[in-house]
Image (cartoon, rainbow, N blue to C red; front, side, top):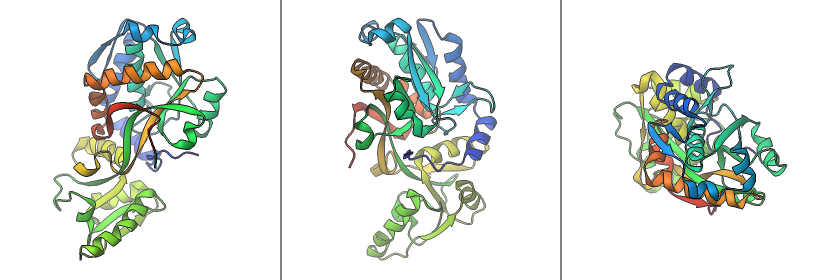
Length: 317
């Protein structure tokens, strides 16, 4: 089942953002494409050299082929997108992170589009080595694949630029009109917070539901609401790309860096390739330590969801 936390970002919005304002993202994708096969690769402005010890620790079949086969569900902004609609060239957070990991490991990360619900079965069948597709690391999936976790994401609050209502936390939404897409985890989050508003002696949140995320965004743009609650990755990407980044901003609550109700997202790896999981975890930690991961995430407006430590099969409540 597709349980990716960013599932509700409308494709129309994602495609518009890609076509209108992908300068920073396509720079890194172009760099990766132009230097593929060399000993060094530039991703997000960082030149990455292969680590021989990590390369030598890879499974023999991957060392011989020089390729890690990656399944991904496209488009799913900001994690995976097409540079140009109708053409196969990819960009996005997962794509760029994959190129960086490949460079560190001295192999190519070859991404192939695959419907999300078929990704795990395809890994089990040996068609792919890994998946990078904003996949939530949960116990059900851990039974059939292993995860190397690279982000933690949940729900976020988006406001107009300048944050005139000075919203800093969910509590600041009490008594105010807030937009949210119907039938989402974000709607449940707002409903669940009503009790906290009442306990604090404040009015309940005036929840305004909309059939699509884009409709909720329009309500915020036209000042019909003071905030929109959506997934934090979607909020970050929208704030960065809409009108050149001049219309919206994301509220960053220090108590919920990755967002409210955040869950880990990971690289799914075949259980038949434990050496690959080990190498990926070490390569990812190296890229975290030298700041590369932060730069990759930041160019998609979602630096706050990046992990500070590369974990394996993170605990999920």
